[in-house]
Length: 123
Image 1 (cartoon, rainbow, N blue to C red):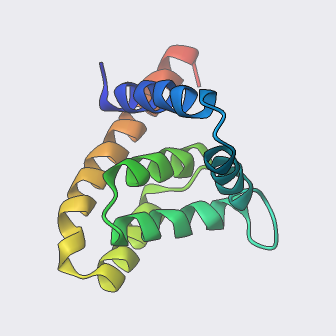
Image 2 (cartoon, helix red, strand yellow):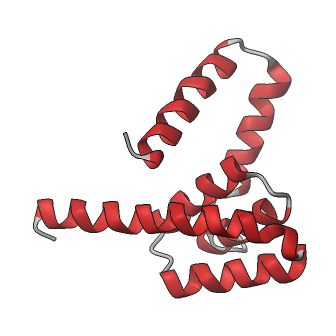
């Protein structure tokens, strides 16, 4: 199983468990998070790039994977991703480098998987 599939399946499974408990505060927090990234004065693309930088600076690998997946879905290019990585490393310092490595590995898999999917579908 790819790390992308493993991450997405685990995230979906555990979100279902957490949201299924119907805790008003947690459910509202999840809803607020969802609404934050919707189109507004800033585009969803811009918000996802900001989320990726913040996640890298805060050193949350799960958040980094999530935002990389969203960035990929939104058509953000590899060149743009590496500029985002550069901003995160300048803001967060060299302690962010290991997270950049793992983020780069995840991005490479997203791109490779996307290409494989495109070839299978004839795109």
